[in-house]
Length: 83
Length: 266
Image (tube, rainbow over all chains, first blue to last red):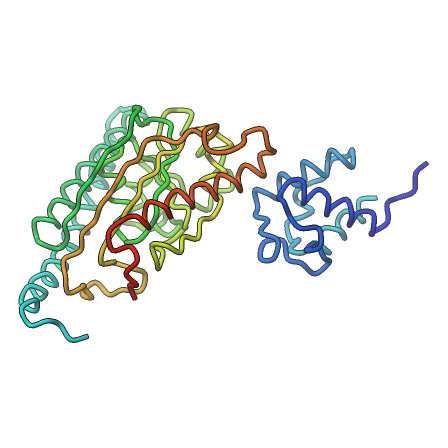
């Protein structure tokens, strides 16, 4: 059974998804980066991001979990808590 | 600000006229509300009610624009370059003044506005907005609702700047309009509004009028079909961004070409 992905692996996956979907520079995707203010990701983008993560992680992710998430680190926290 | 002497009497008349126009607007705004109340008790279906309310808003806006022109407050021209019937379009307009939405509602048919939450709750406007079938900006399913309206043949008006701008050439377009056009797969109808000198800006008092009479030019441009503007094979999320940039460039080019566009207005 494959072990749960590390935070670094999740971070790399998230950066790749952001680049693919939103042309976000991977270098800008740091833990403290704010989704809206720093990375220009709005609420509609967030839904598309969830759809994309759902595909790559092969499991359903409740949008509710991200309701209070504002930063890259916050997204990683939620993703880590899933596994 | 010192005013040129010959202009001063004219200005005082215009300040008076502006006051009268605000009063007329308050009274006129209640006409569709009264109508809405009447329509509510008549056995009409909601589509019919919506159509009647929107038509009454349309003619009131036209009356209002012409009244302001007659009173010498402003001069305006409307140029219609649209090539196809306007139905099911995302109407995209720049937002230099308070009265932009009134111009669009006056000269584009079957416009569905997205109202500020405050207006949707205001006791004077909420009935009219509801009867006109306008959407409310803070609705959770705003995008779904707007898509449904477009597919039903209504025209949804969006100011990508979100609020009145401070300069014609520093356009800060948010992605809502492009999002909607991509999601609904609807054509865009640009309405380019040019006002010189700039009037009725955010923070202006009603009696602060420029020393010369403002000229407004409203141009309804031919529709833009997404496939002609951007690469539609890219992921949707990228299309939102490229279409937003395209639209911003589109408006910037047209506003920069307008006479006096380079004048710095403060």
